[in-house]
Amino acid sequence: MGTTNTTSNRRAPSRFPNPTSTTSYWRTQLHPLNDFRSSNTVTEVVDVAIIGAGLSGACTAYHLLTPNPSSGSAPASSTPIIAIFEARQAAMAAIPSNHP
Image 1: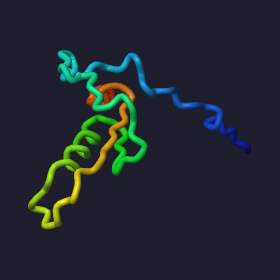
Image 2: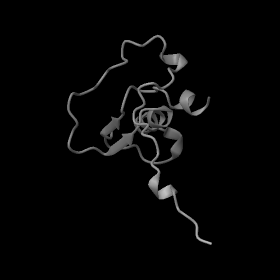
Image 3: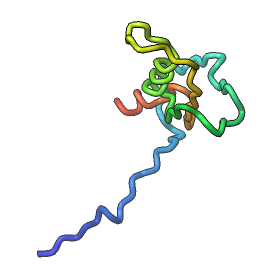
């Protein structure tokens, strides 16, 4: 008996970015820095590129920029150049839209 593989004909729905996503509680009253951009252009060379400004992306940037004297390692000689790329605004919707 033969089987038909129909999964190759299916495509996942596009979810990037979803214009009707759930609004997060913490985004009901927007902060004055809601649409802040540190630059109108992207530098050609960065030390770290972070994809997504959700909780993980924001925490990653924070910890890369915060010295940790208890780590026992020598302090960095300079602050890393970090670029965060986000399709919408920071902390937009992933947590509430992934957990109904």
